[in-house]
Image (cartoon, rainbow, N blue to C red; front, top):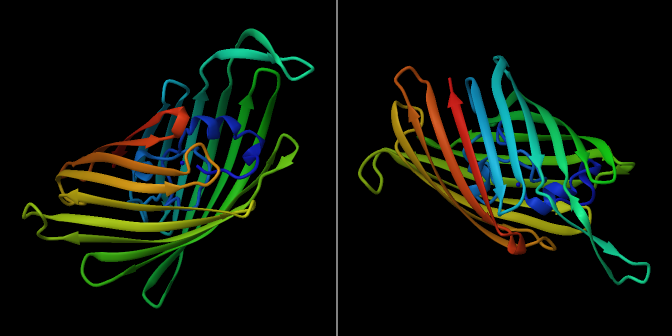
Length: 314
């Protein structure tokens, strides 16, 4: 969600301050470093998209983030298989900043009172692609790419920005109903407001396992993962995530998800951020499903951010 270094797209200031988030992601959507377009699933597991690798079918997803009593972010996205080996995603989002009092600083640096109300808005979009490339030593490997656009309007000026991200993800089946996923991502790399965004590199590992008989005696499963990020400012960020589910998400019926995680973001509004979340998926015999997910993320003096994502699966 988060962790931005430098001036992403020349317009990311408001997103960092309000900790707004991302919508539907292609593949695992690992490595993204701005709090733009993050699902509640990813927010709840320490910023790791443990549940999303190799998604199939048509998805329509809506997300909202309420950053304490402040800004609200809204997003809408869709994913689909263009051809058997190529998957496409399209997202759009809007961030409305709350109005606040404009303060005035005098020439000597002293407080000069207040001068009315100010606010800020952002509009943006993303096109994502996933190409299933090859199979090496039982690993399925795919390339991931994203193009982002953003327009920010501040009280005294406005400017656009654009960026790109590129990476790979790989998954290997380990025995029956178990899989390990690895990923790496470079970016965002972009420009905006006459600045070039700082770059970063991220990578990580995840494990997913479905069991026939779990704590309550029925089909259950769990996932764990770890991610590390290196930022251009010589900062190291990272996250730990875990989830447990009751049911079988690819079968008809109800599946309940419980999520938790921890995110470390040095020199941010809160260096250590514990996460928690939950969700449920109702899938019909036809394969159509509806999913609701929620996550809570503490952000220090900015308060608690609430993430909600609703997904229609066809």
